[in-house]
Length: 133
Image 1 (cartoon, rainbow, N blue to C red):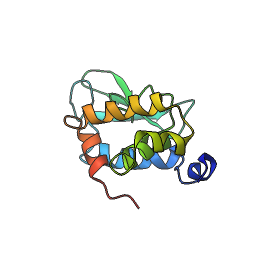
Image 2 (cartoon, one colour):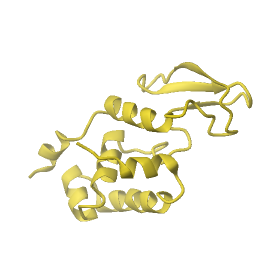
Image 3 (cartoon, rainbow, N blue to C red):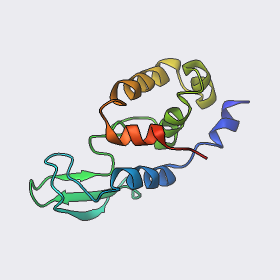
């Protein structure tokens, strides 16, 4: 199958953020900086309006759905990153890079980061354990 065909199976970022938000905030909003639950909604991101912004009333810092996660500050789409996480156990890095039409090194670097963080990052642990349809 060509890279174009596989891209049809990659969810849009708007759908991915719903999954990430559901898993990350399953026990309520928690500040990634100080751990407080005294958090309020603070609008949406300007460039990515599907990402919620928050403000912690304890430490006064702002953050969003992706702050301090493996997904923050990446140049890949959320769909591509979730696709990699979903297929990491059953596909080679070579195969995934071909399917996504991405450079092997890009996929390898992200996959390596996933494997390193999977032992201590609760969001990543839950995403790796999820049963994907």
